[in-house]
Image (spheres, rainbow, N blue to C red):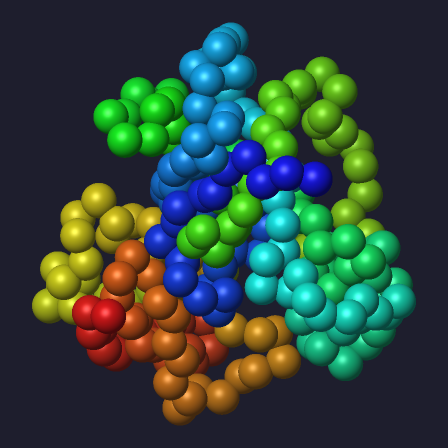
Length: 223
Protein backbone atom coordinates (compact mmCIF):
# COMPACT_ATOMS: atom_id res chain seq x y z
CA UNK A 1 0.00 0.00 0.00
CA UNK A 2 1.23 3.45 -0.90
CA UNK A 3 0.94 6.57 1.21
CA UNK A 4 -0.85 9.16 -0.91
CA UNK A 5 -0.92 12.10 1.51
CA UNK A 6 -0.35 13.33 5.05
CA UNK A 7 -2.80 15.22 7.22
CA UNK A 8 -1.81 18.28 9.22
CA UNK A 9 -3.73 18.87 12.45
CA UNK A 10 -3.29 20.81 15.70
CA UNK A 11 -2.35 17.66 17.66
CA UNK A 12 1.35 16.87 18.01
CA UNK A 13 0.81 14.22 20.70
CA UNK A 14 -1.85 11.54 21.12
CA UNK A 15 -3.25 12.80 24.43
CA UNK A 16 -6.28 14.99 23.79
CA UNK A 17 -7.12 13.78 20.30
CA UNK A 18 -10.89 13.18 19.99
CA UNK A 19 -11.75 9.52 20.49
CA UNK A 20 -13.69 9.39 17.23
CA UNK A 21 -13.92 11.47 14.08
CA UNK A 22 -16.78 13.94 13.75
CA UNK A 23 -17.00 14.70 17.47
CA UNK A 24 -15.67 18.24 17.15
CA UNK A 25 -16.69 20.13 14.03
CA UNK A 26 -14.53 23.13 14.99
CA UNK A 27 -11.33 21.15 14.44
CA UNK A 28 -9.90 21.95 11.00
CA UNK A 29 -7.06 20.19 9.20
CA UNK A 30 -5.40 20.07 5.80
CA UNK A 31 -4.51 17.08 3.67
CA UNK A 32 -1.38 17.50 1.55
CA UNK A 33 -0.78 14.96 -1.20
CA UNK A 34 2.54 13.38 -2.01
CA UNK A 35 4.10 14.79 -5.23
CA UNK A 36 3.18 11.64 -7.16
CA UNK A 37 -0.53 12.22 -6.45
CA UNK A 38 -0.86 15.98 -6.96
CA UNK A 39 -2.57 15.67 -10.31
CA UNK A 40 -5.67 17.92 -9.99
CA UNK A 41 -7.64 15.47 -12.12
CA UNK A 42 -7.56 13.02 -9.20
CA UNK A 43 -9.82 15.42 -7.27
CA UNK A 44 -12.25 16.17 -10.08
CA UNK A 45 -15.79 16.05 -8.67
CA UNK A 46 -14.78 15.71 -5.02
CA UNK A 47 -16.30 19.06 -4.04
CA UNK A 48 -19.75 17.66 -4.86
CA UNK A 49 -19.52 15.63 -1.63
CA UNK A 50 -19.94 17.07 1.84
CA UNK A 51 -18.03 14.34 3.70
CA UNK A 52 -15.16 11.95 3.01
CA UNK A 53 -13.77 8.72 4.38
CA UNK A 54 -10.07 8.71 5.23
CA UNK A 55 -8.17 5.43 5.33
CA UNK A 56 -4.98 6.01 7.28
CA UNK A 57 -2.08 4.46 9.14
CA UNK A 58 -1.70 4.21 12.91
CA UNK A 59 1.87 5.39 12.35
CA UNK A 60 2.70 5.58 16.07
CA UNK A 61 1.77 1.90 16.48
CA UNK A 62 2.92 0.48 13.15
CA UNK A 63 5.81 -1.43 14.74
CA UNK A 64 3.85 -2.67 17.77
CA UNK A 65 2.55 -6.21 18.26
CA UNK A 66 -1.17 -6.75 17.85
CA UNK A 67 -3.29 -8.26 20.60
CA UNK A 68 -6.47 -10.37 20.25
CA UNK A 69 -7.95 -8.52 23.22
CA UNK A 70 -7.55 -4.91 24.34
CA UNK A 71 -8.65 -2.72 27.24
CA UNK A 72 -10.93 0.04 25.88
CA UNK A 73 -10.32 3.26 27.85
CA UNK A 74 -14.05 4.00 27.87
CA UNK A 75 -14.65 0.80 29.85
CA UNK A 76 -12.27 2.00 32.54
CA UNK A 77 -9.22 0.18 31.22
CA UNK A 78 -9.99 -2.89 33.30
CA UNK A 79 -12.19 -4.94 31.00
CA UNK A 80 -10.87 -6.78 27.98
CA UNK A 81 -12.75 -6.91 24.66
CA UNK A 82 -11.91 -8.48 21.32
CA UNK A 83 -9.74 -6.22 19.16
CA UNK A 84 -12.20 -6.51 16.25
CA UNK A 85 -14.98 -5.23 18.52
CA UNK A 86 -12.98 -2.05 19.15
CA UNK A 87 -11.15 0.69 17.28
CA UNK A 88 -7.91 0.05 19.12
CA UNK A 89 -4.73 0.93 17.19
CA UNK A 90 -3.08 -2.36 18.21
CA UNK A 91 -4.39 -4.37 15.27
CA UNK A 92 -2.94 -6.97 12.87
CA UNK A 93 -2.81 -4.16 10.30
CA UNK A 94 -2.40 -0.62 11.74
CA UNK A 95 -5.21 0.91 9.67
CA UNK A 96 -7.63 3.58 10.83
CA UNK A 97 -10.88 4.85 9.32
CA UNK A 98 -12.31 8.33 9.86
CA UNK A 99 -15.18 10.34 8.45
CA UNK A 100 -14.49 14.06 7.98
CA UNK A 101 -16.35 17.04 6.58
CA UNK A 102 -14.93 18.48 3.36
CA UNK A 103 -14.56 22.24 3.70
CA UNK A 104 -13.00 22.77 0.30
CA UNK A 105 -10.20 22.23 -2.18
CA UNK A 106 -7.45 24.84 -2.13
CA UNK A 107 -4.82 25.33 -4.81
CA UNK A 108 -1.39 26.14 -3.38
CA UNK A 109 1.88 27.15 -5.00
CA UNK A 110 4.10 24.59 -3.28
CA UNK A 111 1.81 21.60 -2.70
CA UNK A 112 -0.68 21.66 -5.54
CA UNK A 113 -4.30 21.11 -4.55
CA UNK A 114 -4.87 20.37 -0.88
CA UNK A 115 -8.04 19.41 0.98
CA UNK A 116 -9.38 21.37 3.93
CA UNK A 117 -11.43 19.16 6.25
CA UNK A 118 -13.12 19.34 9.66
CA UNK A 119 -13.71 16.83 12.43
CA UNK A 120 -10.56 14.74 12.02
CA UNK A 121 -9.27 12.62 14.92
CA UNK A 122 -5.71 12.23 13.66
CA UNK A 123 -2.26 13.10 14.89
CA UNK A 124 -0.36 15.75 12.94
CA UNK A 125 1.55 14.13 10.08
CA UNK A 126 -0.53 10.94 9.96
CA UNK A 127 -0.07 9.09 6.63
CA UNK A 128 -3.19 8.72 4.48
CA UNK A 129 -3.65 5.59 2.36
CA UNK A 130 -6.85 6.50 0.56
CA UNK A 131 -9.74 8.97 0.36
CA UNK A 132 -13.28 7.98 -0.60
CA UNK A 133 -16.57 9.89 -0.72
CA UNK A 134 -19.03 9.40 2.13
CA UNK A 135 -22.39 8.28 0.74
CA UNK A 136 -25.21 8.91 3.24
CA UNK A 137 -27.71 6.60 1.55
CA UNK A 138 -25.51 3.57 2.26
CA UNK A 139 -22.97 4.74 4.85
CA UNK A 140 -25.45 6.09 7.40
CA UNK A 141 -27.42 3.63 9.54
CA UNK A 142 -29.43 5.56 12.17
CA UNK A 143 -30.90 2.33 13.56
CA UNK A 144 -27.48 0.77 14.23
CA UNK A 145 -26.60 -0.25 17.79
CA UNK A 146 -23.55 1.16 19.58
CA UNK A 147 -22.49 -1.99 21.39
CA UNK A 148 -20.48 -0.99 24.45
CA UNK A 149 -19.34 2.29 22.85
CA UNK A 150 -20.83 5.48 24.22
CA UNK A 151 -23.51 7.32 22.30
CA UNK A 152 -22.26 10.81 23.07
CA UNK A 153 -21.21 13.65 20.81
CA UNK A 154 -21.73 16.80 22.80
CA UNK A 155 -19.15 17.98 25.31
CA UNK A 156 -19.78 16.71 28.82
CA UNK A 157 -17.67 19.08 30.90
CA UNK A 158 -18.18 22.73 31.72
CA UNK A 159 -14.90 24.44 30.75
CA UNK A 160 -13.66 27.26 32.97
CA UNK A 161 -11.22 29.11 30.69
CA UNK A 162 -9.85 32.31 32.27
CA UNK A 163 -9.91 35.20 29.81
CA UNK A 164 -6.23 36.02 30.36
CA UNK A 165 -5.33 32.46 29.30
CA UNK A 166 -7.84 32.16 26.48
CA UNK A 167 -6.47 35.25 24.74
CA UNK A 168 -3.08 33.53 24.44
CA UNK A 169 -4.66 31.13 21.93
CA UNK A 170 -5.21 32.49 18.38
CA UNK A 171 -8.89 33.51 18.00
CA UNK A 172 -9.51 31.00 15.21
CA UNK A 173 -8.36 28.14 17.48
CA UNK A 174 -10.23 29.05 20.67
CA UNK A 175 -13.56 27.35 19.90
CA UNK A 176 -11.86 24.13 18.80
CA UNK A 177 -9.66 23.97 21.90
CA UNK A 178 -12.61 24.61 24.21
CA UNK A 179 -14.57 21.83 22.49
CA UNK A 180 -11.63 19.42 22.82
CA UNK A 181 -11.43 20.12 26.56
CA UNK A 182 -15.20 19.75 26.98
CA UNK A 183 -14.95 16.19 25.63
CA UNK A 184 -12.77 15.32 28.67
CA UNK A 185 -9.40 14.13 27.31
CA UNK A 186 -8.62 12.13 30.47
CA UNK A 187 -8.71 8.33 30.52
CA UNK A 188 -12.04 7.18 31.93
CA UNK A 189 -10.36 5.49 34.90
CA UNK A 190 -8.65 8.66 36.14
CA UNK A 191 -10.60 10.93 38.47
CA UNK A 192 -8.20 12.90 40.64
CA UNK A 193 -9.43 16.48 41.19
CA UNK A 194 -5.98 17.87 42.02
CA UNK A 195 -4.08 16.17 39.21
CA UNK A 196 -2.82 18.49 36.46
CA UNK A 197 -3.11 17.20 32.91
CA UNK A 198 -1.65 18.69 29.75
CA UNK A 199 -2.37 18.49 26.04
CA UNK A 200 -0.39 19.86 23.11
CA UNK A 201 -2.65 21.83 20.81
CA UNK A 202 -1.80 24.22 17.96
CA UNK A 203 1.69 24.86 19.30
CA UNK A 204 0.66 25.34 22.93
CA UNK A 205 0.95 23.25 26.09
CA UNK A 206 -2.46 23.55 27.77
CA UNK A 207 -2.64 22.49 31.43
CA UNK A 208 -5.91 21.72 33.22
CA UNK A 209 -7.57 19.85 36.05
CA UNK A 210 -11.05 18.40 36.43
CA UNK A 211 -13.30 18.44 39.47
CA UNK A 212 -16.64 16.73 38.99
CA UNK A 213 -18.26 18.04 35.81
CA UNK A 214 -16.05 21.13 35.57
CA UNK A 215 -12.69 21.50 33.85
CA UNK A 216 -10.37 24.31 34.91
CA UNK A 217 -7.64 25.56 32.57
CA UNK A 218 -4.71 26.44 34.83
CA UNK A 219 -1.80 27.33 32.54
CA UNK A 220 -0.83 27.77 28.89
CA UNK A 221 2.70 27.79 27.51
CA UNK A 222 3.85 28.16 23.93
CA UNK A 223 5.81 25.16 22.72
